[in-house]
Length: 512
Image 1 (cartoon, rainbow, N blue to C red):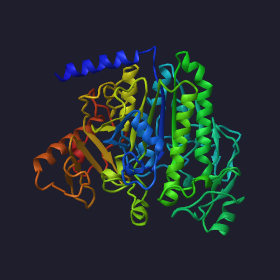
Image 2 (image 1 turned 90 degrees about the vertical axis):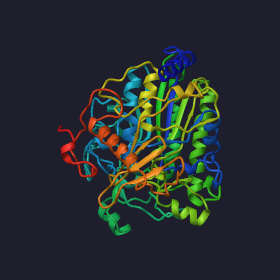
Image 3 (image 1 turned 30 degrees about the vertical axis):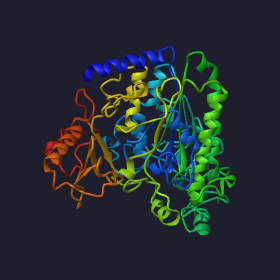
Image 4 (image 1 turned 45 degrees about the vertical axis):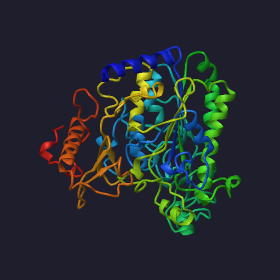
């Protein structure tokens, strides 16, 4: 019966989109540190409104059990673009800086490379944070030379954006392989009058030493024309300009893929003045309202250009909210993490259960519905591949499982294989249906939760269900050791055993 249901769902899907002839344009909008409770359609008690996000949900599908693959920037972005968990790479915890060897190795399939191979124009506009190779070293750069090992080498035809989070420096408006205005000056964090964090804005200094004398910290590289609060406007402007350039091709059968990773509401929280005073959640609420405004600009462009009907928008966030979520509860009675426990960096639901909306007027049947089945951002690669009837090879999308049937069938029986979550320090959990096992880590013991009865993870029932815990331990061990979640031949992870796999011994881990 399950096989028959899958076959019928596929027939419905094929009939609905007409493979080949009606391939959708795809826009992935990826916010930064936006919690589940930071979309008003998901949080009835939100202290600000997000009408454009609410529109995505009302005119599409709201995935209410959707997860990023890690709880901080770099590894989540790796998982989104490759369909593979980042902990399988050399990066076992934390994030990269602006300058680093790109975490996506040459030749690995990405959303962009797969779609480009299937006839798509591809672009990335926004924050990368997966490593770039800049010419020279800080203080002795040659900005006439190109940047290497960056989005243009990972499947994207066009790139405009910044290398990483704003606190890591090398801040300039990069287009292609070059900075429009090179980052030849230096700065450090400045006080922020609208939030508890910082600002990156002029005046800037000529040397790191001058920055230390002025601000008490050694300076990071910045371009003379860079200002933090211009990111959202510039990224949206460039996105619309690029889509406008592809519009004729899109209408003639050559679609486009735009990856738009925004810098909000990650620190620095810096809403433009026209958003000051909006909402009831201080500067943070203003910044999310501005973010929502730019999503609205994308929607308006698609409508005005005649591209709206066959453009799929996927909206999500890279992880849960920054630590200031606690202060927002106290000061504004706003819960950025919604009803869940924890936030950014945490292994609990508030760290990795995120807003996730899919709007596709010509492809989503019965819009306005919610879907509470388990999905992960790693699943986009397999989902897009199924829509294009493109078969992924065994060394691509190892942790990616298509949920395309959900678009066309409101009663879809899609059931995801177990989800592995991972926090900033390196702790693991496994979720299988209603059950979530948080693995032992350093001095912390294992924890078991029934998410259906206890979504806030307040009642650890590990002692009451040892058999369930043992079953989940066996499943996560297999997923780790096989190098993949999906069916197919075992493939190696990029490293040998590491100490965060505390529930198993090194002898259980396969030799590379």
